[in-house]
Image (cartoon, rainbow, N blue to C red; front, side, top):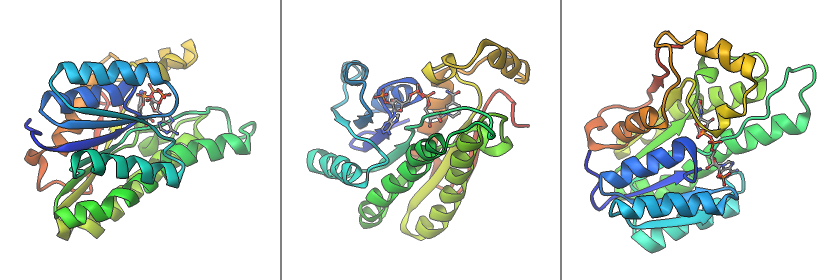
Length: 247
Ligand code: NAP
């Protein structure tokens, strides 16, 4: 896929799926603007890996749940590269627990990053993309947003909400040449899933028809497709990348 002369903003680009997305877009020739929450070393490592592929990179510390920081991020991207062609809303967290014991702050933290963060980033690029009369927004939902999961009421709410926002904004921006889609990964090998208890990992693995965890690159290639010119007539869709889990 060819992203020459295009600029992509990838939230949570320092690690995991976001890192793989940055590399995939860099491989296609994109300028990459990645943001991270606090892990500067990981962000720097990803930036260097993208540069090694020939990309120009800007790494910005930005909490996506903070409107002022999100505006600074997008302003910095436009100041450096002049445009934003692709936004990948990937930054996400979990704070798992059963509803009966889940703290209100765990609900608020997860929805603030995963749901409000996606809202703020889309809002911050929408005008720029409408002005350009083209743009691609790809949001990271989850199989949990489609099916629910015990112990993840907060996360499921955020990821189901991302699907609702994706479809709504797709309808708002379709006539302006801007597409908005979501991917719903299943169980992917990253720091997020490494933190799961062993019993939960074993049970989840048993529910995957393909019988293996996904690699970050499995998801990154689908994100890149939706961000590319090849997906010009695709909008408002949720593409599961889950080895068959959500069938
Ligand atoms: P991860 O390895 O835990 O990485 C999370 C990334 O998000 C890091 O780059 C982190 O930055 C960044 N981040 C966290 N909070 C942030 C905030 N408030 N503002 C800006 N950046 C923030 O996660 P992952 O597994 O790659 O997941 C990436 C996305 O895919 C998430 O939205 C997740 O919900 C979704 N997803 C993952 C799976 C899976 O199986 N892994 C399945 C379905 C959906 P730092 O490095 O600075 O901490």
